[in-house]
Every structure is written in structure tokens, then in C-alpha cells.
Image 1 (tube, rainbow, N blue to C red):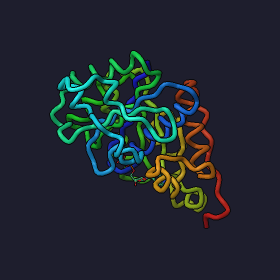
Image 2: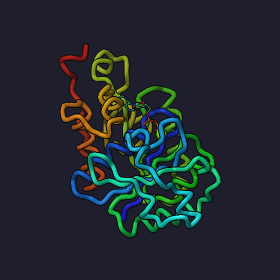
Image 3: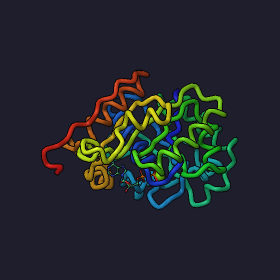
Image 4: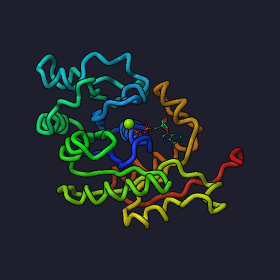
Length: 247
Ligand SMILES: Nc1ncnc2c1ncn2[C@@H]1O[C@H](COP(=O)(O)OP(=O)(O)O)[C@@H](O)[C@H]1O
Ligand SMILES: [Mg+2]
């Protein structure tokens, strides 16, 4: 039903991570969720979720008629979220064909989350024009904010119902010392609506590759808040607190 693209200007800021964890949380909360990999990169969505060995078909097989859309969906390890993997020749897929696949999935699933490639070229256009809503991911660094600003301007030229911001990799210790902008300061600079603050968390990388989320991970609560804001259209962000083990 809801088609949401997760995008950013800069690469490596956490689009795939946010897509995977948001998708897993929404699924754990009982929603029917499918994650569509719009990117072909080092850390593809299936790899980032530790399910690459479950992949049989990908989006190009669907478009070539080699399988039906549902046959191509890989199942997550921990939740019942499904993943439509990208293919090595994803670059050739047209925006129209991509949108067709997304629309057919949206008939069955509550949430279609599209993991957008970095940059603002064809792959970006294809992913964004297939969605109704966008989540922009940035870190609090100057270069990521600059790129997020460009992307927000570009997104305003698309007929999206909603565009919201997630600030990823915040460090409470650095913010307290004035060495990092807070998520709220970042959102103010961008004039964007903040719906999630995800702390920098080493467990994300470790557990993601096992297809799991750690119950004790500092980011767990942050993803729960983000997921609730997305599901219920609320904007109540919670500032992650400093942890005693983080010096
Ligand atoms: N909040 C976080 N804390 C720690 N590591 C993170 C966090 N978010 C992302 N990462 C790591 O940063 C790297 C890039 O993230 P990724 O989601 O692949 O970015 P993108 O999809 O935007 O290129 C990955 O190794 C990922 O595990
Ligand atoms: Mg990615």
C-alpha cells in the first residue's frame, strides 16, 4: 500500500541499513513488508541482510518473465519481511518497468520500501518516481548534509506526498562536546521533518550480516521509534542517550 523510497545524496550514509532495519521492525510489528533493492553496490540489500544465499531470482528475472514477482522474493532470516534483490544488470531497467513491479507488490504488501542508489542519475529517478513518499538519510557531517540538501531540492520536483529525514550515526559523546551537530540541528539546517535519530552502533554491522538484530544494541530502540513514526505518521523523535561504555 505505502511506497516509500529511502534515499540520500551521498553514498555510504546508511540507506541500506535503514531500509533493512526499518523493514524488519515493521515486519516484526505485524505489517506485510517487502524491500526492493534499487541499488547495485558492494553492500547490496541481500548481502547487508545476510540472505544472499537465499536469492534465486532477482528483479531482472521478473521483468523478463522468467518468474512471477512473488517467486522472486527472498525471505528474511529473522522476520517475515521479503526482499526483491537487484540484478547485476539493473542499470538497464527502465523507470516504467521498475514502477510496474513496485505497483504490483504494493497491491499485496502494507509497505514497499525501496533502497535507492547513491547519486541523482537514472537509478535515483527510477526509484523516486516509483514511490509516493521519501525518507532522506544523512549523517551529521557537513558533506552528507550538503548532499542531503541537494537531494531534498530535487525531491521537491517530484509529486511525493511526504518527505522526511533520518539522521544516522549520531554520537552523543561528540554532540555533548560540541564536536558533532545534533540530529535536531541537522534537521533545522535542512528545513526537514525529523522522524528518526539512529546512533552510531557497532552492533549494526555485526548483527546485520547474521540477519539478526541484537536485543541489547543501542540502535534497537531508535529503530523502534522510527518504525512507529513511519507506521503511525507521527514525528516524536527520541534523542539517543549516552551509554556508559562509550567514552
Ligand atoms: N548507525 C550506524 N552505526 C554503525 N554503522 C553503520 C550505521 N549505519 C550504517 N553503518 C555502516 O556503514 C556502512 C554503510 O552503510 P550502508 O547502509 O551500506 O550505506 P548506503 O546504503 O547509504 O551506501 C555499512 O558498513 C553499515 O554497516
Ligand atoms: Mg546501499
